Image 1: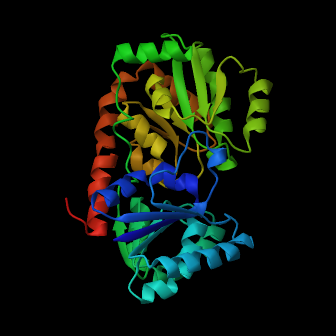
Image 2: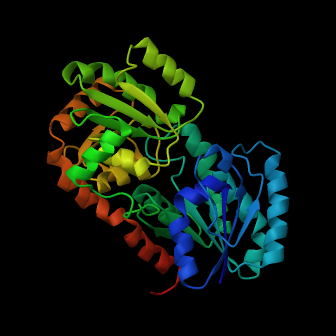
Image 3: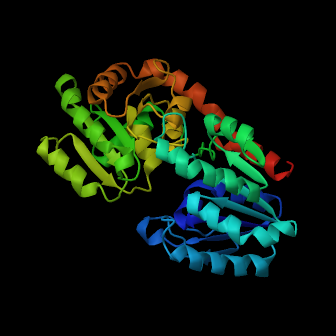
Length: 371
């Protein structure tokens, strides 16, 4: 079987689809990737696990003329290579790919699209339903199998869309990288990173974008450090909001308690040395950083949105807070930092269905490949 994976950017394939490629290789499949090469922006990421990689100028904006060029290049590749399966990802990557694959699909190529979180959902702005819902519903006619990672997305697509709809539990968290370290290894790692054992560390993970709302986590630290002076917030990720966040940290006088790590290739180590995770996004599909933290036995304080609600049981493995409720973040962070062990087993229990091992089995079923 010959498979093409597409996405708007190559880093998406690196971060989320290596387990799928491994499964396909285990069953003798040849795998190609088509996406825009953005790896220079992502320190340490390498797309070295596919037989062929095509640099295609996809653009996130639907208004960009680059997507017309991407369509033409991709259509030629699809016509030349004659794939058995084309598996597309990300909104614009999915749209352009499915248009380019129309002819191939008529000849028997199976087209799969993974939705990593629809822009329309319970509580989404009305304009999202007006714009994005009709587009996704229309493009379901150009899709053989739609894979959803959120239960809410699955139920909606199953009842409204024009294709086969499947559900998987995320793209599979790497359980060999994200696991609960013993106390000795954790203490050694903290020392190597320059943090003392008595510091209480809060981790926030995500690209520095307005949607990720890191400013609420930063503001919450004003109250957290009053109750827990030895607490520290580490923010992992890069992006256009970096300067604004740095300015806010300085404005609030939090330079000693909030640290911007930038993009890190050691996320599993930071996840293990932290005592809790905080996530303040306005919108999420099913965020891997929450699952990875839970696999390490960490409680999570998260904003109320579709993806977070699916992962966090309020008061059980963490707490849910309105996205802009700075005091809510602060009070619940204080609660979990003072009693993090209370949530450990609950976090580990919920995380197991989202491991790479479980999701690998779900993907094998969708691809109709056996053990």
